[in-house]
Image 1 (cartoon, rainbow, N blue to C red):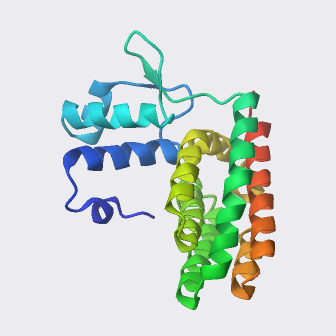
Image 2: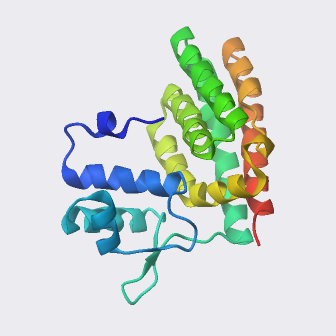
Length: 218
């Protein structure tokens, strides 16, 4: 699991609140369609109103939350058109990050990715939805860090914020054991420094994940 306290040590209050709320969205603690209120977050996060307002402003700008008028803020509900757009964007960007990572991945990075994937497998075996979501994102985040492409990585992180709550819903519907991934193929491609294979495996991983989310739509 991610150590929030360690990650946010020394950061200003508004950044700590932003990262905590971002993770709540990313890992589905806030469900699609769920209303979000300043007062509710102040109480839940045990913080002041100013950092909560700043975090909400940033997340609305990033598309992770939606302002619907009458001061009402909600977690977006994806429809098929939105999923199609997210799929196109992810399949355009994430295979390229995997391609770059394959050319830059050293033994230490490969060991970290392998360990993360092992924790992901353990979460799947236990039916640990939160563990699955955290470790799955961690695997992709670590891979993107190896790619050394901060602009592409920031774009991809924004996409993950948009579908994270819906992925949590899918896990609840189908269970973690029915969420296939291509991580073993990605790891094999990284070990071989095969950029084409890494890109192909990531494209398949993205396509499988977005297909599962689409299948979970009402």
